Image (tube, rainbow, N blue to C red; front, side, top):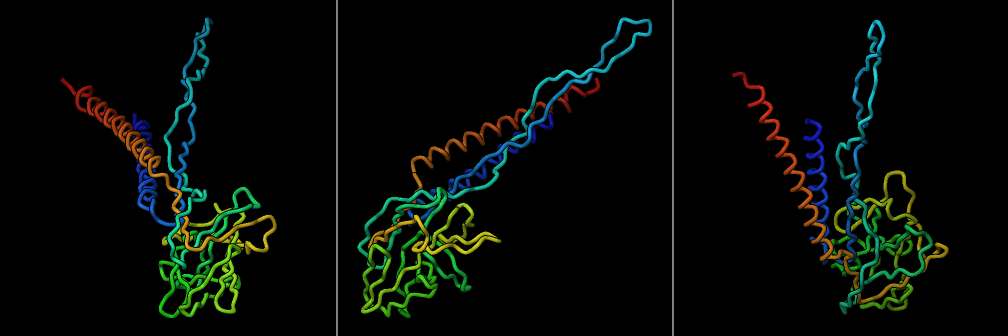
Length: 274
């Protein structure tokens, strides 16, 4: 009976964490370039149940032989193993703002590969994002909507001087007589990136720096100016999944209540001395 407590409680915790993931996705349904998270559930190891018994032999000494009868297996519950971002490209939305940019994936060399803008955070470390909702700060640098520097192909902040610029489909910023290649990084396996706040990704510990997308064989892309990539969250499907998670939580809760009532009877009624 106590095993049933743990199994039902594990199911409730798993669905609660899944609900939190779905709620975060829904909250970012309008965030440009946001990649929804998918919670993966995994079962705890199954246990094999056997009944221990003995059988008497028709001998003069009534010898007992120990025996084991296999009953079957029992599952010990589920847990959220990890949350994995879905890097499917979102649809494009035209904004008419010259500092807005969107990466449009062309040919991707690896099945799990993806492309990112390169950003420099407040600690001077390189980060990656699909959110091209950029602007120009007071010093004339191209920055993200959180104030992080947008980097060029050489890893330097892009100084616009507050001037208007054009962006070619190849990602070249045409500023006066200058052509500045926008930094576009390529990850062979985007699932190895670690999600941070503010729409940023970073390298996992021990991972090598991302490749320059322009020199990576078999990888093509275009950059659309005055466009933003929408979040890839499907609001309708997410609402359906949230209701499903809630119902699963509720069912596990009812199982837990049933076990609690059975335990109450076992303690307070069956064992009562009359």
